[in-house]
Image (cartoon, rainbow over all chains, first blue to last red; front, side, top):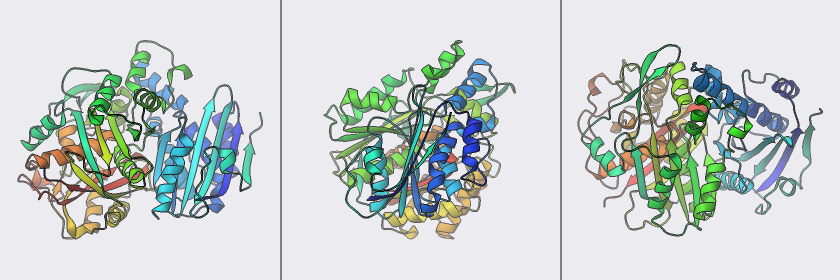
Length: 188
Length: 366
């Protein structure tokens, strides 16, 4: 398995509107009424569109769900005893981000969403590598979305194909060292 | 795909505190009684299928599942996959309902529970998988693939769906829940689904072990990008997924003795599955069954809860006949349905986010 393309997006304290504006330069028709997790995943995936074929599986990991969306739902339903807004509820189904990435990039393969823990790169590579080896797909797009209050957000993406040696590295820097990484640093 | 065995299966559901009781109730055609909740603002009642037995906290339930499915042995050769859409949100909902302000301190990392259990039990690896209603089906499929390729020797799939108020109100606002409490997938006058609570586990291994329940021969999962909430109504994506699943198991439609339908009883999803079935099987439809009336729609857990109920009910003799078969839009069996011990079965699981999955299973006669 080999890495053929990579991207990394980094930023801090950016509103959803700012993320949406940044996304506009990569996608002609970005999805409406999406949550932050979807926007972040799309920001890293969209610059890789030229490298991707339809027969691609998506393996997305995130540390957290779209928390503001989740809090809005909790406030509405549990504190205010109101019905949730339909689009907020649908977005809370956490593979909504994977759906929008697949739809925007035209990916037709498997679409998995996992929680990002300490072994996340190993799990992402195992899942994608397995589908590649079994010829279920021609390419794998792996995406890791991380965001916290101290460091802001960081989204890393790799496009994988069969061929080359087994990938033994388990961090983005080492995994992407054979390709030129598309970097997007959102200013403050 | 190299076949993988399902062992040490557990299920706690509305139908019973354990898999054997649930299968016995299903075998006899005994439907669980729903509890009712109120839709906010509309003040309308909707049914819900809560688990039978004494209430237990989520961690206690998960500990119980792991202890029983692992049979007390070491787990350092085993991958843990948690499959759920709600995880422990019910606990967070209780805090918000009690007046606590929402904030980042309240939201645990998505993998927190899996990592906690990995450390406590010594699993070789662990992760949380959420692909909506295909979560557990994907956990079975990818767990099996990972052990078949020797990434791990075994994989423990733990699937659960807790009674989340956000989920109940969310499905209500989308007009997907049944006001009548008559859960009738594929009925011409179906009026929606009943959500259900469930906790289930199964050990996957390449060796049969002392009492294997079934073999997982193959499967396929892919994303239909036509809509976030519905799959293509013409059934084309479902057809493609079922065909790829059959191909992965090196079999074909004519070899399938039984199809466990996804059958949510919502208007569009049942229609898409009907069309998908007609495309794949044409006029030669095999015997068909639906299990959601017995468990409720257990969302992220249904890929395991329904698979286990299917296998154990058949092991006990037969699945119950469908009492509205004459009004169903697919030929559901009106009489009790049994299949030979080593028959091939297809199990469908479809969900939000365009995720569609099909599994090919083979029963094992004890």
